[in-house]
Length: 362
Image (cartoon, rainbow, N blue to C red; front, side, top):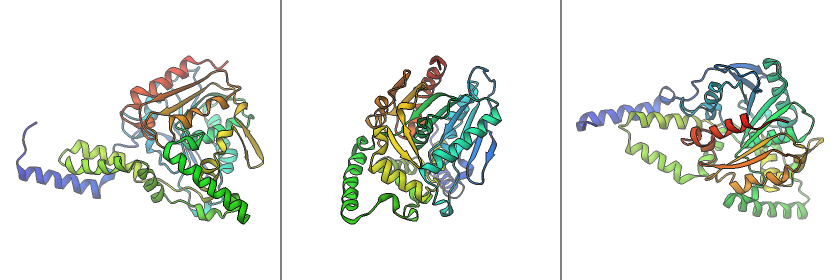
């Protein structure tokens, strides 16, 4: 690589810094795979990524995203795009985008998403694709929604289920899990001594705006976040590195909000009270039971995932007592990396594809 003169190097760094600060959207490579919106209810939408060449025997694959994230995570780089990878393999891919809920949606709870909105989205996919049988892929909280839907036991037209980075026994998620356990004991004490019912706490107290979710996500790995910005300063003359940093930031810096009731459910019930770890939970007027799930299920954990550790994720396996074809694998990467990290295209995605094609439904 030729050595640049100091003046040229300074100008290059200045231009890259200007673009990274003031024009990051022009640098980002994220979100370049084309799609059509086939359903929209004013907040929630369903995207369709058309397969380059379809294989008739493969059911459509529905990606169930968690809330709070923006959809760029599934299409972060052209070479690290899960939707592009699956489409090029002949899959009809659909992605559920939960939108950006404002405070007017504070009454939307876990039951709202699992019992109402998710079934409506799956019905839209079935109408558009003309197929009843669907494969489902749920990452993080998307896996919780998937399990709630399948655990109702009323949708007979489910094919393969893929659960990625979903914490089932939250108290086994390392330091975060131990903190949740201690906090839950304090909450139990308050309920016993002051007649406080956690489910009756006002939903508006728990509304979490997008900027706060982005900050919380970065704080789960503050060292890595800080090192990323230090490396950006060090390599500011490297245009390709600046572009990559802006692309990553397109996802990390632009998360969306949690509705209050949903945040209350996930924080107080799923994390603190650890409801999913029992395999049975009451959701609205319905009882969710994981032992009703008989569909082939692949469970994936990230080796370096601090939000959903392998121990917290693998806790699902014994709860799937009626499932004869269930597989647990651990792959490289953290919570985000198992979906769109540098190793995902070689260490994770091909294993999903192989499992889908090799695991029979009956």
